[in-house]
Length: 68
Image (cartoon, rainbow, N blue to C red; front, side):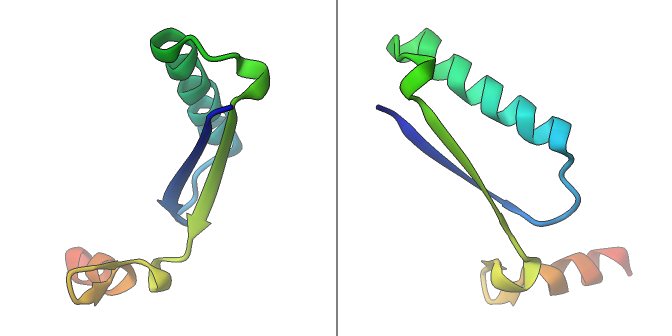
């Protein structure tokens, strides 16, 4: 019973993109590990960029600096 947790920053990912992630991840587990899709769980967590850090900075601040 595979459980896959995908964490992404909360930056406008569409319903269709999430569906593609779920389908693609499930298919990968079917193809590589011969797992049953009926017992494969894929959970997508969207994390606010204030709550995601790289190095010493919040992703929110990194994104702001990149726009300058």
